[in-house]
Amino acid sequence: MSRATAGVVLLVLAARAAPAQGITVTVGPQFALASYREVASGLRYQGTGFGGGASARYRKLSAEAAVVRLTLAPAAGGTAASGFTATEVDVWVAYDLAPYASIEAGFIRRTADPEFDAQSVGAVRIGARSFYEIGPGATVLFRANYLAAPQFSGGGHAGFSIDLGLGLDVRLAGRLHGTAGYTFQRINRKTNPGGTGEIDAPIQGTMARVGLAVGF
Amino acid sequence: MTWHRALVLLVGFTAPAAAGAQAVQNATLRRAQQAYDNLEYRQVVSLAQAALRERLTGAERARAYELLGFTYGALDSILRAVDAFKQVVLIDPERQLDPNRVSPKAYSAFDVALRQVLLVRQLRVDSTSFVGGRGAVPIRFTVTQPARVVTRAIGTGGSYVIDSGAWNGQVNLSWPARLANGDPVPAGNYTVVVEARLGQNAFSASQPIRVSHGSVDTLPSLTSLPGYQYLPETEVPPQSWRPLGLAFLYTGGALVGTLGLESSSLGSSSKRELAVVGGAALVTGFVMTLRKPAPRPAAANILYNRLLRDQIARRNQDIAQENVARRQQVQLTLVPLPKPGGAGPR
Image (cartoon, rainbow over all chains, first blue to last red; front, side, top):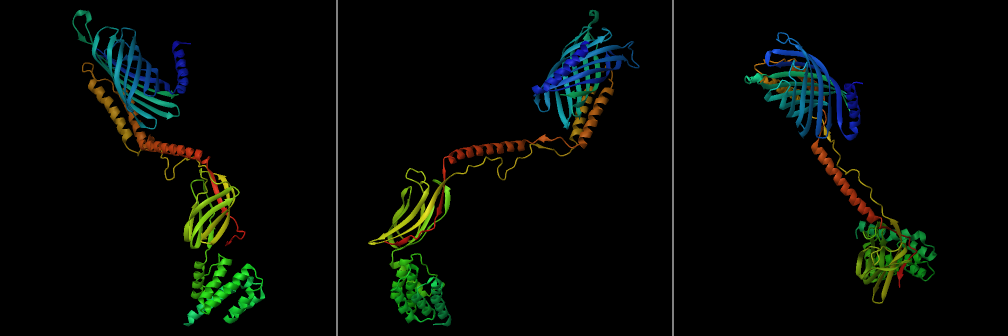
C-alpha cells in the first residue's frame, strides 16, 4: 500500500470518528486547472491535475487542507521549452470572529519536478476570510492571505506576496458536497544572480479546483 | 271595601287553611276548617276552641290556632289573632305566612305575634367544602327578639362555641370549623345548636350536620401557560435576490483582486480558472435565489421561548411547594343532615 493510499484511508477513518466529538468533517477528491507564469510574460504554463481536500470544523475553529499534483505544459505562444510537474500543499487553520468572518493562518508549499524547471516555494499564510451561507447548504467564501517569509528553491526574497481565494461549497445531496475553489497568487520575488544586482523575478499563478466531498 | 280588596281577603283567608286541610284527622277541626271555608267565622271560633280541648297532634293544634288567628283577623279582633298566632309559632317556629296569599290584617297579626315571642327560626347550615383554615361554614338564623344568643357545635368530638353575642333579626355567622390550635374539628356528626336567652325566656334551635375529612387535591404541573404558546425558533426569511447578489459580490471581489494584483511584467493571467469557479458561484447564487431560503434562528422567538420556559419552571416550582403544603392540609366537607325535629321553647 502506497503512502498516499494509507494517508487517504487514515483520513477517512479519522473523519468517520470525528462526529462523535462534535466535529464536522468533509473529505473528497478534486480536479484542478492551473496557469503559471514566472520571471517574464513569455515563461508561462498551463495544465491540469488531481488532488484531494479535507476540511474540519469544531465550534469556532476550522481547518482546511488541500493537496494537488499538477502537470504544467508550456502555454501556446510562450517561450518555455518544457513542462514540469508541481505538487502543492495548502493548509489553513481559522478561528471565527463573527458568523461571517474568520482570521486564518497556515502555510503553502509548492515543489517543482524537475527541481529547477520552476521555483519551489514555501511560505507562511496569514490572513482573513469572509464566508456567507447564500442558501440551504451553500456557502460562498472569499479569502486574502499574505504570504510571509517565503522561501524559494532558487534563492531570493519577496517583499510582497499575496494569495486571494474564492470558494464555494454546496451540499448536493445528503452528505455529498460539491466544492470549487479559485486561488490567485502573486509573489514579487527578487533575486541577485551572481551579485550583479537585484532583479525582479515575479511569480504569478491561478488555480481552480473543482471536486466532490463527503461530509461526516 | 272595593271588589278586588274583597277578593284578596277571600283568597287570603281561604288559601292557608285549605293548604293544611289534608293533614287534619280530628273531625271537629275538619268542621272548623269547613266553617272557615264557608266564611262562617262564629262557628269557626267555637269549633276550633272545641277541637283544642280534644286530643290533637302538634300539627293539628297549630292548625286550630292558625284558623283562630285568621278568623280573629277577619273579625277585626287583632289582639286575639295575635295570641292565636303566638301559639302557632310556639308550636311550629318555622311557620311562615306568604304575604301574597294572606290578608294584610292576618299577616300583620302574625308579624306582631312573632315579635312578642322569643324564637330562633330558619336555622340554615349550608353544604360546603373547603381546605381547613381557608374557608368557613355559613350559618344563618333569625332571632325574633333582641336576645343573648350562643351558637355551639356539639358532637362526638366535643362541643365548640361558634359564636356568642347579642342578636336580633337575621344573623349570619361564619364558622371556620377549627380548634383553638388551628387544627380542623374532628370528623363526625355534630349538631349546631342556637340558644337564645332573654330574661327568663329561652329558645333553642338545632341543625344536625356531618363533618368529614378528605385529602386536598394537589395541583398538576404546568406544561404551558394559558394564552401563551411557544413560537418557532427558526424563521424562513422572505425570498430575495440576496444569494445572487452575494455570489456577485464575492466573485467580483476575486475578479477585482486578480485584475488589480496582476504583475505588469508578467502580463494578464489566465481567467479560465476564475471563470470556472466564479461561474459556479453565480449559478449557485441564482439557484439559491429561486429556492426557498433556509430557515434562520429567530432570536426574538428564542428569547421569548426561554422566558416562557423560565416562567413555567418558576410556576411549577411554586406548584410543587403548594403541593407539599396541600399534602399536609385537610379538605373539610360539611353536609347538613335531616332534622329529627329539634326546636322548641325551654
